[in-house]
Amino acid sequence: SVVSNAALLLVTPPLVVSVSPKPAAVLPNGQLMFTAVVTGAFNPAVSWSLAGAGSLSASTGTTTVYTAPSVTGSATLTATSLVDGSRSDSTVITTVPVLVSVSPKPAAVVAEGQVIFHAAVAGTSHTAVNWAITSGGGSLSASTGASTTYLAPATGGSATITATSQADGACFD
Image (cartoon, rainbow, N blue to C red):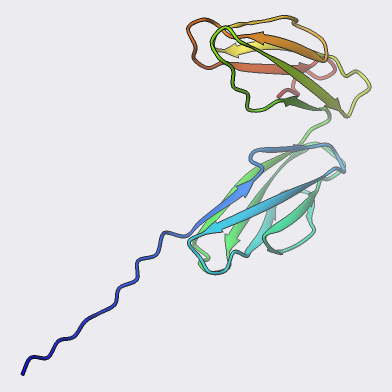
């Protein structure tokens, strides 16, 4: 007689934790929501921990709200899987005196095409920015103001457009 034993093998994908947004900036006393996505686990919840100043609205779950301190600085937010404590992801949160945000982001354009970029500035009454192409090619219609139009080169490629606060040159996006 022949006896056969079979084994069932279940292969699961690796457990990965991902935190967003990354990196993050917030004004003093401001708030920002963070989300953790856990793939490869039956339980998507994480434990949240903070190294640095500020506070969190939740210590477990898939989201938490960070409240910044009244002074500038940085903190590190870490999300650790409740299924596997060796799996985590972190992001650095910077509390800045002036916050610059550019839209759209990201942007795509055809060769020799145009994209209009807008900058929003918070934390100061002086909301003007300086625009620059910090890498890549192309040209800008304006070097100052709330918006600028980017003209892509004929050769294609990628470019980085930066808006820097005129009120605080250390604050840019």
